Image 1 (cartoon, protein in one colour):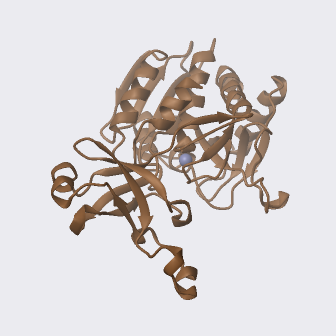
Image 2 (spheres, helix red, strand yellow):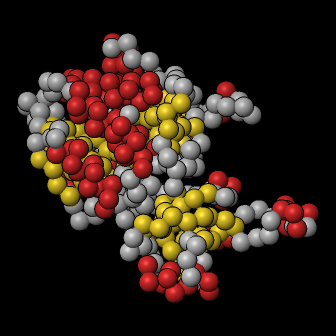
Image 3 (spheres, protein in one colour):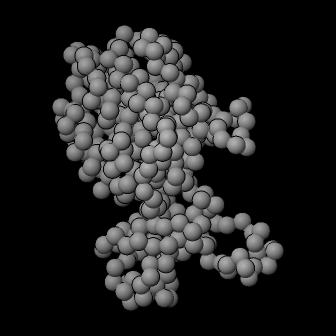
Length: 345
Ligand SMILES: [Zn+2]
C-alpha cells in the first residue's frame, strides 16, 4: 500500500496535476514501452501487444477535487473557488494545503460564528463552498508574498490503513490509477496494444480523456474509477450502488455512459473463469472517463471497472484492500484475453 499512500498524498487538482503527473509518469516508465504527455497533460503509456491488432485504452484520472485561491482578504484570509464537486458538509473544520510559492498548511472554516453565539435560524442555514475561508496564520503582507490568486488548494489528510480498509484523500481516483499500474505489473502475454492513460481534468467534465482518446483512437475503452459504496448505517440495499468487500464493480450504466453489453458480459466471464469476486454496478448520477472515450471519432465500445468507495468526495474516501487487489487482477486477466472478444453490436 506504499504506492497507494504516495498517490493519495501527492497533490493534483484538475488543471494543476504537475506533481501527481510526475509521480505517475515515473511509475509508468518502469512498466511500458513508451510514455508521453499530451498537450492537456494526460500521461499516455503504450505497452505493445504481440499482434497489436486492437488498441485498448485503459484510463484512470489523476486529478482530484479541491479549490483555487480566488481572493485574499484583509488580515490575509483566503477565499476559494471550488474545482470539482465538493460537499460543504465535508469541509467544516478541515485542514488544507495551499500550494503557493511554497506549501502552506491552513485551516478551512466557514465564515460564521461559533455555535455558542448563533441564533437557531443561523444554526440551521445550509453551508455553501463560498462561505469558507482559509486561515494560514500569516499577516496579509506575508500571505501576499507567498500566495497568488489562482494557486491550487488541496485537502490535507494522512493516508491510513485500518482493518480491511484504507482511507485518505483523492482515493477518487488514485485507487483507479493504482489498479492500472498494478495490472500492468501483473500482465503476462497479451495480443492487444495497451494504452494506459492517467487522465487530467476528469472531475470538471471528463476533459482529459476526451483528447486522450481522440489521439489514441482506441478500439476498446476501459475506465478505472471509484464508485459509491453507500453500504453503511442509514442506507438501504436497493440504493447502495456497491458494497465494500464484495469485489470490484463492473459498471452497467451511469449518467455519462452505458457500457457495451458484450464487454460487460466478457468482463463477467473473465472474473468467473479466474474466480475473482465481483459485483455489478448501476450508478444513477455521476460519470467516468468511459463517457468521453465512447464518443470520440465514430464511437468506441466502453466499460468501467470500479473500486467501491465509501465517503466519496470527502477527505476520508475509504476502499477495501481486497477489492483493490481484485480489481487489478481482473483488469490484468481481461487485458490478456481481450483479443478473443467480439464487441460489435
Ligand atoms: Zn473519479
